[in-house]
Length: 242
Ligand SMILES: [Fe+2]
Image (cartoon, rainbow, N blue to C red; front, side, top):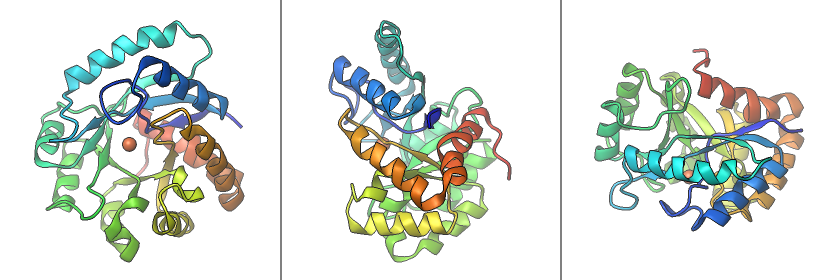
């Protein structure tokens, strides 16, 4: 199968912990294309103190890389978003319209929590984003330590309209046993709305390919393709139903 839409990847070179150079960025896109992705959204980090990227810098880096992408026919379609870490600075930026919600609808944005604790007032913050007409799409919830202990923590977020994005690598043990177990349990519970690669290197695509096979095996074709195609498309186009 092909036509998958990847809502989370790091192929723009030199701006976060993703591709170190243009060649690797292009190799990531080619490798994801080879395993069935028709569209790959770049989501470079905005994370205070670690990746102090602002919107303008990310847009310029994207445009520069787009010239390279267009020189190489056959790569997946691309667009720009960001992985917004929910710290004070980035949250403030998002609420002021200075984040990078998913194109073209700009009604949903990728949000990341710290891995070992949920941020202060996270529920209020996610609610505030919804008031601003930005639906939070929570990156790799299966990797968050508080979730390993209590998946019910995520229920108020789901009730508030947040969407959960599976990093498929978790299914094949890329992040260890606890995230793998959490990912399978959350799949079973129907918590996820979409699935992504979170690719940082071209070599990541091997695990992503294996993980997608696992996703089909566990969930069946219809549900797997919802998570890889329809769910992501609804997020991009702003057609998620409440
Ligand atoms: Fe990421």
